[in-house]
Length: 320
Length: 285
Image (cartoon, rainbow over all chains, first blue to last red; front, top):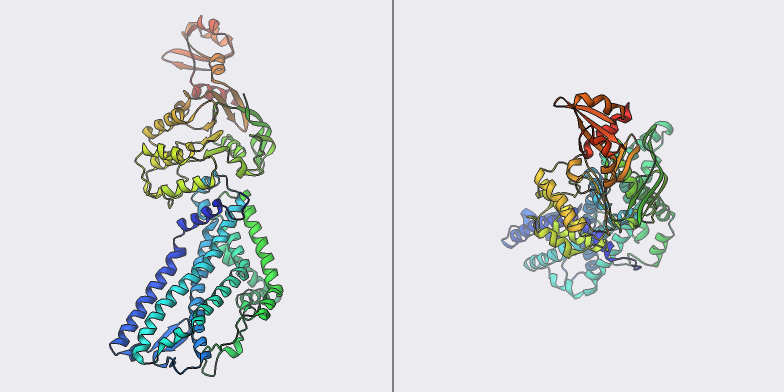
């Protein structure tokens, strides 16, 4: 019973997946669609119509198939950079998709069972409201890191197989990519790190949406969205400033240069393409910078306030 | 006998309206208590207070717990069916059992399976695919599989057809109830539960107007069918309520000796519904 995570907690988290199939269905469907599209491309290349599907647009990053580097002659740094771009671009795509999925999951998390009155069944079980709310938060964080990570790796491995076949056909010696065994796995470690950092960094947003979900008597979406927009509007109207908006939007991006040795100003080359070099993206310097950032701690403290509020509402004001 | 629930000066206000006004009552172990009252009388508020689902003023002890603190501790010993169809539509039967088994230390999978075997409910069905009656059967099976000391039922058969309603109480009585268990039930369909109750509690306008055992009720309340010529004699004994039936007068008395009343006419034990109506009208006069 005193273990940090009990059988009860595991069941509470599984309960969330029974109810919210979209948590794993959406990334699965995305993998399916992209696999089919890539397969179509592969077939096109194999039958000699590569020029028709020459450019792939994945989350704003353009790959020209005939511009694939010749891996046998490329510098190791180039290969490492290439693998990282693929991993982190796919990771960015899945983390973006999961943010949308989890926004809707959290909006419903403390509202749906009040609307259909099944809350009376859940609350007839010896599970505290704190535990229930935290299990939903944990589900969101685990889903964001775990499912984004797994989906990225699965899709990347599928694409890698396709690329090996395609690259062989195009004669760019792709098999040499496998002679850098640390490259792919190393890029996955960066991915995992980036996802964990975001799961913590975005806690105030998660907490806010849960608070709206616990508060709303109807349409938690409007509470979650209109209250911040209203505050921004009021600030603009009264003070003619946009500090809240700037804060919210800045916070959604400011983790990146803190957590990674990544400078957005030099990350784009003169053609406007994203380039990664082989240097260390993460080190003690970046980790120290992240942990020393007041933004991380203020955000986490704010999240604690929101989540405490959600628990309080769940316990004391759960009737619609 | 153990007292499971002890309320002293229990009050609950919604704005200026007193849903419960300094109510005192005890519920003893091994009883089936019917809490009867019109809509808005405070029944549901009283149940919610007992279950830790609402805040209140006054003292309330439920199995040694203050229900306002730590509902989840209380729920190990108390279970409830709050209304029909509160199981979520997406929930599968097998998942509901799995959930209860791993969060409730007193839940028995064997018992739940035993109860479900007698129904048409299948393990892989979703609640949304079941009829209203089946959802209630499932909920009852889940609740009866919990070895709880106190079971609270708030209108458990509302909206069910008569077959399911009968079966609900039969199952409850035959498979669940024993001397160690206590049931607190509210319903509009008093006649359905009157035969199984051991205790009766009337609640009206936030106050308890009657609280006694069914034996005591049968002793205290008598209905007499009186010919018109003796009506004046009956009225002199201050009946609680009178009405006309087939040219005769039917009087309901509280606390008047049965021998005395037998001289006036044919005596019966009144139904709970009749006593309730008489008490409610008495209160209004």
